[in-house]
Image (tube, helix red, strand yellow):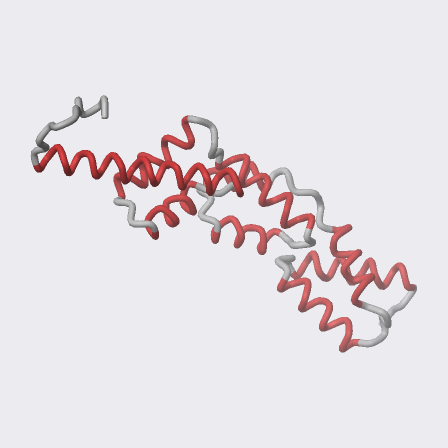
Length: 174
């Protein structure tokens, strides 16, 4: 009310009414953005997508995304690092994690730093193979396990190194 110098009984011109509607819409969208970000971190891209679904204009999307970053509710680098830690803890490899960063609309300038904090995948691969392979002489079982690792985002060289470590642990050779 103070921004538009409103008072009781005032007759509104069309442009003042439109400005009031835009301000109310922006305030509502800001409130929703704060609610979403208080429940779950997200990237600016995800936030803009949600705002667009609620009827925000491109200018409102940009302004609200900048505002939540300014007040510290949205930090894309921290979000990228959290995603990397989360997906790596779930046993996923580099390619699956990159896919998650892409799907979650994390800007690419944060990928390198976030991915740089990844641990070596050897332990995750070894744990996965220990669970999945009960008979290291069963080629079908080995193929299924190696294919599953590839789908989880590990490179074929990482998978083959893991298979070699499995062979060494079980003293099994071709």
